[in-house]
Structure formats: structure tokens, C-alpha cells
Image (cartoon, rainbow, N blue to C red; front, side, top):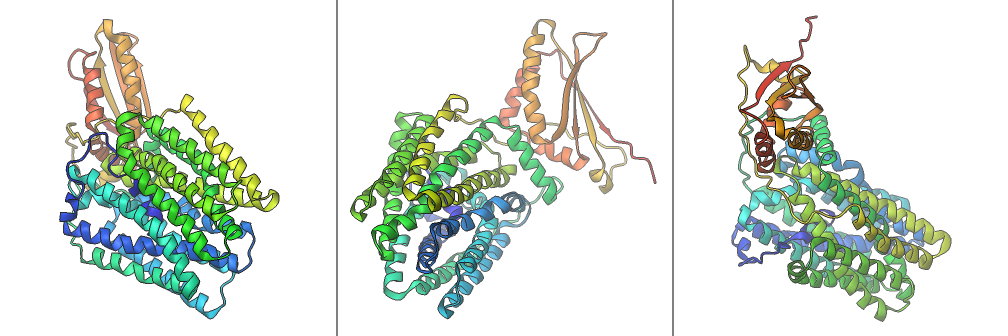
Length: 540
């Protein structure tokens, strides 16, 4: 359960300090799941160390070792959209149980093949991919689960505890994995990972998830995927966060992809590699503890850009160090810098998406995040194979630092809008309505405004801003027109794929959108007149 917990670094970064960080532990389900997650994450980090070390032991080149990271990340790139849609449509509890069982089965197969001595570099890559595929399909549902376990007031504290748990596992898991590999062999580390899944399976299986009643028709997987892409496309703030994450991940992935090779060059024992990963995790814990003071003093952009710059310098410096005693403290700094970047980025993308599409927006974020990681790992591994590890690290470090230039044209949002649901639209009464009307469409919606003459310019500016809301929430086409015979009369038109989708569009309204509607209302005389027109399909 390693990959999905990258989200959990984001806990507790709001500028207002919480009064009781430990209060969510009073909730039995959350407490039990957190404890089970510690064991599972430690097992996952041991699996990561074991796979990388086994690849080194099989005398594979740097490209194969780097491909371990690619095999771990690529499923997130391939399955993210499907997994996000499933997380918003299916029962998340059952989905998590299924994926956990799949990962346990793959982990057991890795143990058996390693003990039998038949593991090869390509077989290890395939099984790593299969193990990560289960994690990739589970991740959006897992990230969207937290608000169901704790109240909204406890969400920041619960996220903070998850972040501490994950970084604790990152500090302990690699070092423990390296020790177990050195003492009992790599198969034993794989076996511990297999056992670690059962704690989460037991807690989730015993959890009685409340039944959620739908007020709108259920989306299909293709429709839900299209809705997610549309939402991100027409959300400039989310696009900014996603694009900058992908760029930074492409360059910074070099440190994770090449670290096994770096560790093996300075220390032939698996303990050395585990120690470096453990130092990185310990540094991340320190960075998480520094997050509140940093956020209270500086802007989100300043903290993120500083973290990325320091991370780039760490990658550059790693190319010049050849002793474990100097690399270990460098990894402490790298871990702290990493958490400054990833925690704030994760918090931003979650806070920018409303509940109805959160798992899917997170899935797109994961797609870009892991896609950048997978492509970067392969690219830097290939460069290291051709030109040497030092050259690859120098190029990647310079690229990481250079990515901060994006602040000039893609600055991170400093605050988020109120995305609380605000369904105040009246649903029209349909003549002779039955279940078949849900599938009918497309639906043409017209909204007629009588604009106050002296406020036309303000109205046009506001209505074009409102276009993003219409398209984001379900409209496939949109336009605003004025009456040639009555210059004060404007008609907004937009097209929705079906009547069911238009019903969902009503449910997707937020307080932030309502505030924009109030701006529009201040420029018109009287309430607008709305009509709903359904495409007239000829009978066969």
C-alpha cells in the first residue's frame, strides 16, 4: 500500500493550527486502519528495497534497476482514469478488499518464485507491474475514503496522522528491509510484505460502511471518465497543479530510480540502500513537522518552489558523493525538501475538487504524477546506462531546479473556493416522464437574460467566466448570444449529453458557483427565463 499513501504527506498544512492532532485516534475504525497501514506500508517499502536489491543481485544493468521504478509507476499512468471512475461509482469498501486480495496473491507468488530460484529480471519487472496494478486501481478510492471515516472538522488532523504514519514507515521500512535481506535473504523480506496485507484486509472487512443513497442516476464508467477530464480541463487552478507536478516528477524521479545503483556503488550490502531510504523517510518526517511554521510565514508558492530547488541541489550533490557517510545526511535533506513539495501539491489538488469528482480528479493527478515518474525513471536510467550515473544526476538536478521557472506563467493558487454543494436550481417537471427520459438527449438548455444597459460589459465578462462552470459541470457546448432586435436581451445556450447528465449537473453546483451567479444577477433586470429542450429522436 505504498504508492497510494503519497497523498497522506499532505496532512495538516493549513495555516490555522489544530487544537488536537490526536483526536481522530478516538475513532475506532480510523485508529485500527492507521495501525494496520503502518504494517502494510513498512511491508511495501521492504518489497521496494527487496525488488531493487534482487535486480542488482541478478547482475542486471542500471536500466533494469531503473525499470523497477517504471514498473511500479506505469500502472498508475495506465489505470488512473478507470480507477478514479470506479472509485466514484462502485462501493469503495468492496473495491479496496478486492485490490488488497489481488496484491496479497501477487506478493505470495513473488515469494514462491524467489525461493524456487527461478526469478529473472524480466519476470521480476512483470510481477512488480502486477503488484503495482492492484495498488493503482485502489489508490483513488483509498484517498477518497478518509472523509468517510472522520468528520470534516477532523479531516486535517486525520490527514496529518496519515502523513506521520507514512513517513514513519518510509524511515523504518527500507532500513528494516535491508537488515532482513542481509540476515535472512530477500525472500524473507518479500514474505513480510505478503503478511502485511492482512491487517488492512481485516480492518476493512469488519468496517460497516454506511449505505449512501443516490439522488441522481448512476454514471457509467465511460461517462464518469469523460466528466473527470472535462472538469480538469475547465479548472485552470487544477491544471496548473497537475502540469507542474508532472514536470517536477519527470526530473526528480532520477533520485529514486538511480539510488539503488548509487547505494550499491558505495556499499555492497543491502543495509546501505535501506539506510539511505530510511534517512530519506526520516528527513520527510522532519520536513512535515516544519510544514506548519513554513506555511504560517510564507506563501504556498514560496514553500513549494523552495522545496523543489533544494531537491534539485540534492540530486546535483549526489552525483559528486561516493561515501555512505556523506550520502546519508544528504538524503535527510532530500526527504525534507521532497515533503515540502509533495505535501502542499497533494493538499492543493484535493481542496480544488468537489466531493462528486474528487476521486477522479485525484486519479488524473496520479496519472500525471506517476506518468512523469515512470517516464523519468526510464529516461534517466537509459542516460545513466549510456553516459554514466553522474551525468544523469547532473542533468536531472539542473532540470529540477529549472522547473521553478514555471512560477512566471503557472503560479500555484494561494487559496481555494468554497466547493460545498449548493443545489438551488429547480428541477423542471417533465411531461409524461418515465425512466426512458434519462437516456434521452442531447438536452439543449437556454437561459434568457434581460441585461441592464449600463452593465452589459460587466455581464459579458461574468457570463464568459461562467462558461467554465457550465462546461466543467456537464455542458459539451456553450454560447452566449444577443437579440438583434432587442440589444438588452441575451440568451445563454448550452448542450448536455442526456437528461440524466443534466440532473447530475444540478447536483454539481457549489457555493463558489452560486457567488458567480449572484454577480450575474446584479447585472440583469429580474430572474432569467430557463427552457429545457430534448432532442426529438424519430421513431424507427
